[in-house]
Image 1 (cartoon, rainbow, N blue to C red):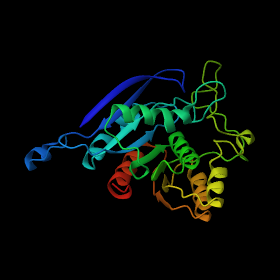
Image 2: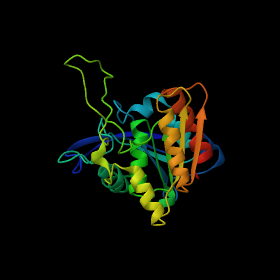
Image 3: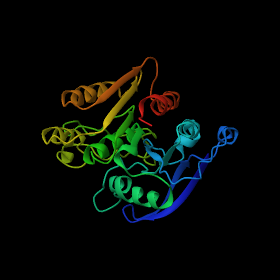
Length: 266
């Protein structure tokens, strides 16, 4: 397996950005069976995997076995950063949605042997990354075939804005919010529910979704509500709750493995 970290100048984010990637390579079994994965030009299927709030592109390498799971299915994985930007196109500054959905795809297709056909493009994330994955998939429904949302869904336009105090409440601590909240998002690219309804009304085929959450997760009720909403719109969605798990890496590692080995059409 090949793991790498590379840096590109991003016009949508406005600075150099470091991205992590996993590209499947020759394995011991390939050697024993006389196979040579380098001898043909077949493009790899790819999972664009989005991190959560307060995370970065290193998270999945540090806290999960994503490389081993992906190698077993010959799947490439690209892990970009969005810092705390909510995978939103922020006004007059960073454009994280545009980066993930467009610029990053173009750059990686130039650098790696990946396919950009819809049937080969998978999108996933956890927490804030799950919010981003659903928003991007609903606004770009014909770009991805399958979407994995773990422990998170986008905010609704009629919800109150959630202020974060995860780093304490003293003056020196981060006191921001995850972008993509409040009534101002109604009908915008951050309003995944609006776009889901719009796609349904226009008979636009949406990707398959796998939404999963632990029963002890503080996002449980939001995930249940999102599942009901999307199911009513005839979205092809599989939903699961795992007993006893919270907002934690043990859960995300377990569900990543399940999605790659059993749910993604690889």
